[in-house]
Length: 144
Image 1 (spheres, rainbow, N blue to C red):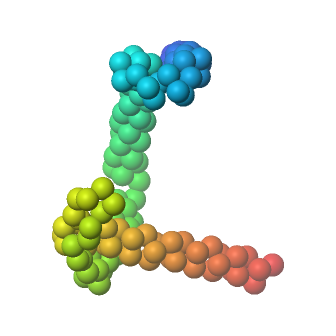
Image 2 (tube, rainbow, N blue to C red):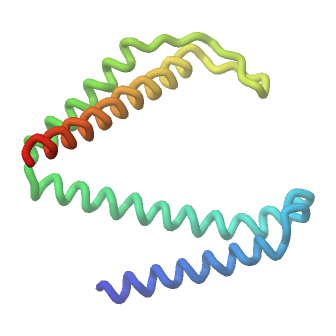
């Protein structure tokens, strides 16, 4: 099974390298000037990227679900609940206002609130990660 996976990785790598070389050989100016050339040169490269992304997502989901059922389900559900709680708190403290975008469109109040929720959740999770690293470092220093 490992040999098959290595062969698939090599095939995708070679195909990606060939398509990338084709893009470099065509040149930026020619690709920007001709829409048909954009489609013929960039689309295959993008499809390879989409396929690799899809395979990666499927493999991650498979192994995550497998680990969920073979590992400590209680600990996983507590962590998932904590993450959902952070999202709910972020949504509660966020506000949204209609915002004019650069291209002339308008971001709705609901869309603005979701963006604010995502940013607030990111800040909370980043602060928790930094705090966890600091506590881990302090614990290592004190136990020595």
